Image (cartoon, rainbow, N blue to C red; front, side):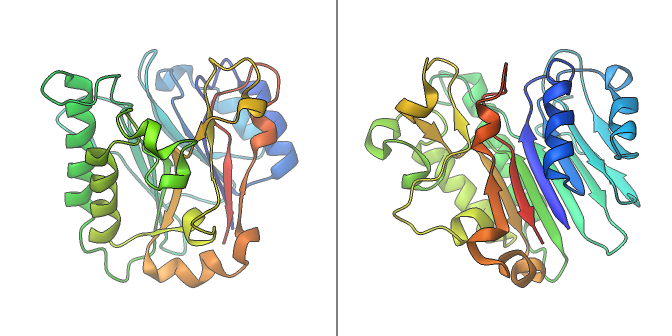
Length: 264
């Protein structure tokens, strides 16, 4: 099974890029975040024509939104609202094998890393805390968690650990909460598990850089985690198990996130 996660930053605006990617990479399951459209505006027919007739969509007007598109039948679809907000930030699907795939778009958190001064940052911290409560004690259940978690947890998941310690996405309150979530389930961070600690690993590059590849000031905001029941299958191919498609970041009018693919 091949699964891809991608913050597309408007699925309607970048539908052509997605279709090109699907034709090239051919994932069995595609998990999109920040689709930015209501359910009735989602280009469902285009995805069905591309070979993805099984669809789970959770959208809202102009903001957020997640969608899971699949070649494989989906036997159960659930959505959870976090922090009491009516935001489209989570959708889960169950496959025939009993594997549950969670697709998340965690709040970005604004610019000020202080929950008392910044309501958006407070929301982000509470969101991750609630995720930890929900996923505590998964046990032997086969779960996959993917998405734009908007946190780069490892010191080599950012271009400069020291310079970004006070920048939202890499602050200790965020990284510590993400570690607590991972431990509580528990989950295995597949990308970092298969990458040497000293190696840089990015999935996002800002639009602000005129030459993003040359400056290479990236962050790893997009994640693929698995529960222990799937660890052996996720790590079986070694470093070849996952791919960060950074070439897609260089396509015309791209998202600022690159797709990430895992082969199980």
